[in-house]
Length: 470
Image 1: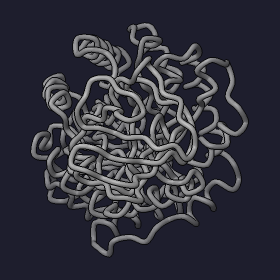
Image 2: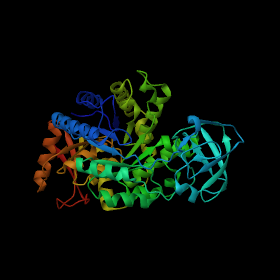
Image 3: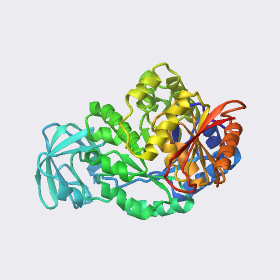
Image 4: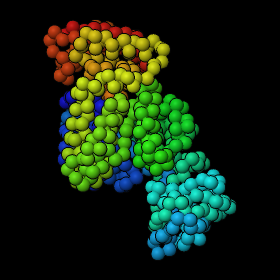
């Protein structure tokens, strides 16, 4: 079945949607890739959902992507006396490395990497920034701080340290066990939390290899300082605006989102915009107008995909949320200003023959009003190079790799088909025409444009364009 839009939808699976019936309803409403959030649930639950998605894939005859989102390290205070501490502005508090339960003079913070990294003048944000304290003194096992923003600290609340680079691996022991489990299941993407430096991506690559694509979640301001290297080493990027918005000013998030989307397009890497996109629909059957505008902005920016979290995982209206996101995307992509806005934000491109051929393919297809671009691709690179131009023509990605076909369910404008490889120019032409007909893209007398690498079976060597009259 064919989607009549270019941008893709990622939906998180949770208690509200983890049955085969609900998964099918979500897919029919518009989901292209399902996210399994390993911050919640147990491995057996995720295995059951994974199996249900693969069964659904076989039933509908379309590749479906599965994204494993690892929890990553969670920095939290310990337990506090009576379960809560009321802090007033200007008050002094003390965080300690040791201790089980404490008051304002001994708040447990069992993270030695924090004590090794913070210096006076830096801030600690607690409970998503609801409480802010400023470090005034650091000892080997204690941190003295002054309350800047008053509030309540309760047990196990999260701690953020904007501007502080922590000597902390993005992969905890739990993550490593979950990762091994996910790779054994056969997930298509692994979302890596708490990325701070390029070495964090390299660490994950050493464990994952090419068994799944690595999606780096940009949620730490430290990552922004090395973003070009992080994007280069990743296979995709997620703009995780929730955590990022805690550590950088709220007003800076929209601009950073645009920068990241543009950088990913330049690097030919898919980019997903995530967090609170239709948050009202967790409990209401319709979003706010501001939320609809938020989704629209990501589409105008040229994002490959937008993501639902609690809306589809625990919300009361998960199918409606997906359907709403689908409608917003189609409305934006059909708007008279969409093409000019997306074209205006197009980045420069690498001056290499494969990029030039992909660009020429997109421009040619638009010029002759082709019905589709048939991109022969083994690794997905040819399709991605064409997609970065955001052409006004759908991309039919033909690949002999089932894994690639599933990963391409995340790529803008791409309808992926798992098919046998071709061995000759004549076979390339006939198979492209056949799939264009069978998938509903073209009919007799229509034209399509095929892009491929010759000799065949050569990865990443996009060097040939062919106009095909159906």
